[in-house]
Structures are given as C-alpha cells and as structure tokens.
Image 1 (cartoon, rainbow, N blue to C red):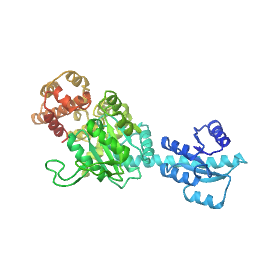
Image 2: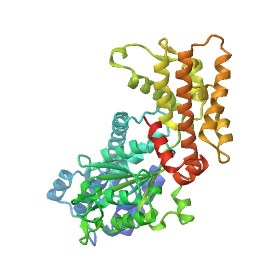
Image 3: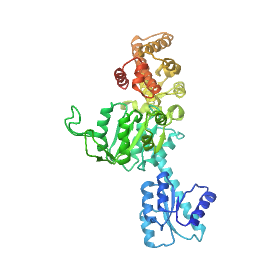
Length: 479
C-alpha cells in the first residue's frame, strides 16, 4: 500500500510496483482512505508519506503496526529530519527515504531489502504456524489446503473483527477458534466456548447475559453471564445457527453497541468481547429462508473461514493417523513402532469420513484397543470402513425409521462377514457387536441431524424417538 497525497507519487508507485515489480498495489491519498483499506485488507509492505492532509505518517505507522505487525513500513518524506527518522525507526519502521527519488537504484535496493525481510518473516511465520497448529491438534501435510487457511486465520486474528467459521461436524471448528484466539492480542484473557444448540433458549440467555436476583423462579442471586466473564477476551459461539430468534436479537445488540442487559436487569452493561461463531450449515440459506437474521449474519460474517472436510484433503490422513496413534498410546508403549499396514492405510485413505477428523480419531483409538501386534491390519478397522458402507445409512435415512431397526440391519450384515471367517470367539463377537451398534447409533444421529439442518425436533421425529431420548442418546455416544 502506498499512502501519499500527491497524485503523481501514487501514479508512479502504481506503475513501479505493478508493471516493473509485478506486485499488486493499492494507493491511498489520505489517512481516511488508508484506514478504510486497512480495515479491508492485510498488507506486507506500506510506503507512507510523513505529511498528509488529515494525519501524519508516524500516527499511521503506529496504526499499521498495531493491525498488521508483520507489515514492513517505509517512511517517505520531503521534510526529512534525523528526529523524525529516528522516531519512525523506534516505532518499527523498516527504513525511510527522501522525496523526490533522484536515483531509482537507491529505491530498488531499499525495496529489495524490505522484500527480503518480508520473505524471511513469512518463512519464520510458516514454521511457527506449524508448531502452533500442532499444539492445537491441527495436524496437516505440507501440501494441505489447511496451511493457507491457517495463514489467513493468523492474519485475521490480529484484527478486532468477527469471524464466522464454517465446516462440517468433526472438522475442528473449535480448534481453529482457539488457534485464532491464541494468535490475537487477547491471548492471555478468557476464551469461552458456548454451544448454542446444547441449551434451551432460557438457559442460553441466562448463560450468555447473566441474570439478576429474582429474575425468575429459583434465581437466588446475581449471576454473571459469559459476556461479562469474557470481557477483553474471546467468545466462541458454536452452532450459532441453533440460536432462537430472541437470542439472535440480543446478540445483534451486543455486537452493534457492546451493551447488554442481564435477564431481569434494567441497567445496560458494557463488554469488550471478540466474537467468533461457527456453523455446520449454511447461514445464508437459513437467512434466505427467514430462519436466521440477515443483519446478524452480516455482523458475524465479517470474515468467513471455511474448513474443508477430510475427504477433500486426503493428504492429511497419514499425518493425522500418526498423531492419533501417538496420542492414544500409553506412555510405556510410546517406544513401539505401531503402524497400519499398507492395506489398512489404503482403506483409511479411500473412506469418505463423513464424521471427519473426529471420526478418524475414534477409528484409530478403536484399532489400537483391538490390536494383537504392532502392525494394524484391516481386521482392526470397523466394518463400515473396510466395506465402505455409505449406501447403508443413505438407504435408512430416506424416510422415517427406527434406530433399533437400523442397528439390527447393520448387525445382520456384520454377522455375515464374521461367520464367513470360520472360527468365532463369542466374547470378542459380543464386544464387536456392541461397538458396532454404538457406532451405528452415533452415525444415524449425526447423519439425521445433518439432514434436518441440525434440528433436534425434526431429527427425533425421523428417528421415532422423543427429543429428550435423542439428547440422551447423544450424550451416550459422546462417552
């Protein structure tokens, strides 16, 4: 970005960077225009004039360094003094240069040094990014699309803007939210996660905003809500699409004004919270269908980060499997070289992973529990992975069904495979059938919720159970 109020300087740099150097460039002729651009984009290099009609280069230097710490800033001035140059350098400027530019060679050399510094920083950031991602269990291959997503997340983290994280169930939206918080200036302050789909409307309202004494039956004292507890920190609203219309209105008010009321309260309270939200369904479709407030969507979706499902990044399966093996092995077995056979790994890589990374983690843990040697073969894998039985669930989820019928159907199919092997261990058969039945219930619930846009009421009807029983089964499957 070039910030200069002289039109000819802007024109020169547009030609110089775009045509001569091959770099995209934006030009701002005032502090206001520069701040507008800084709100919309991140920059690697900024050429900043010391004197501007509505501000000065030192002030803009501070603002650029605050919003984009990795951006190199070169101060340009026709009023060069040792004092201003030293001040700029102390505040983080890369260097300064006098106008007019009598010798292009000097400018070329300065820019080459700045660009070299930028490249070195970016290499360092990528290395540190990989380390930090590992701390949050965000495991990926070198050529994974997650790498670019994390680089973008790291840039977004420094801004005080809302972020909407989109992705299927099990892709790690909560991990990405923690990663953003860890890279933000708010790191060290609270990070609080609330699942909007796990609480009733009244409980969610009390959880978020707190309540006054006597606000409702049973409220014995003042309760501080999460918007108070997370002040100066980050609030992660998971399954935001499940929030009721009433809650959506209250969230919009907080995002617009930073003010909220406790339940039963009459005095507005202020909060400084950075909101990250996540959804496994399209909020744009929900807004179009009048199921989600469009104005709240615009407030939440300042930046949207889409986590690709595991089936779209097969290169990540091997490093993820290695990570989950190490994670699930007891300390005394960490020295062993446990691995999947080529055949088993091929099955893992060819499976579509509808449950994404969470499902892969469960499959690896199950395989380790069943292993009889250090080499994990196909016999350690669940039947649905070995036989890739995706059509099985699709057939059952087309119409209203009963979970017990699905389990019986799957058990019959599995039993045929077991009987074909000849020798049977009845105790092992019992354990296997119980595990597979639990897997079937879990998958049916997940797939039905996805099919109904995460509506538990609709899912319960399709599965011929009450919403209360469905919640119980969900808790059982997470054990």
